[in-house]
Structure formats: structure tokens, C-alpha cells
Amino acid sequence: MEVRATAVEDVPSGGCKLAEVNGTRVVLARVGERVYACADTCSHRGGPLSEGKLAGARLTCPWHGWLYDVRTGQCFLPTRGAAIATYSVRIEGGDIWVEVP
Ligand code: FES
Image (tube, rainbow, N blue to C red; front, side, top):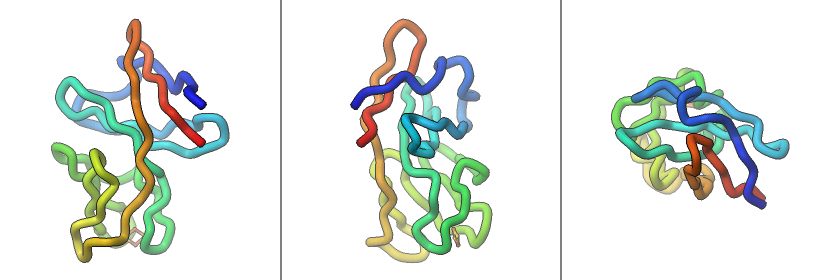
């Protein structure tokens, strides 16, 4: 289902923000003019990705430094294959809508 997560202006440009969307913890990441949404839980040991560092589309887990691409959810450091979920995002009238299960 598609749920309003927050306003675009609540997500810092070039940064990310945690949102609880229909019971799912989602990281909203603002990359340029776009917003991407992915799971908050690192696939390594469950670190909170919303507290990590965003550089471009790369999000670093604050616990042990695994790196994810927020556009695809793919982990590319240290290894490919350990992906996290991503969610479709739609922006309308300054609000961010996220498609969650
Ligand atoms: S829990 Fe994220 S890198 Fe270890």
C-alpha cells in the first residue's frame, strides 16, 4: 500500500531521515532532486542505517561500515549480494509517498 511518509522538506538535502511507514522502518534518502526509500536494518548485524552517512547515493552503516546503494538496496562493500529492501517513492505536492508491503 502507498502511505504518506513525510514532507520532502523534512529530509535534509544530501542526507537521510528515518520514517515509520505503516509499521515499516524506512530510510528516506535525498539524492539531488530525488528521494529514495530503503530498509533501515543493515543486513550484516541489523545496524540502524538511518544513522549512517549518506554520500551521493551511498549509505554507510554506522556499526561496521557496510556500504549500500540506496537506489538499488545493493550492498557493494564488503560484498555484493547482501541487499536490503527498497521501496517505490512518489513525490506529490511536497509530500513523500512510499509503497510498503
Ligand atoms: S551492522 Fe551494519 S555493517 Fe555491521
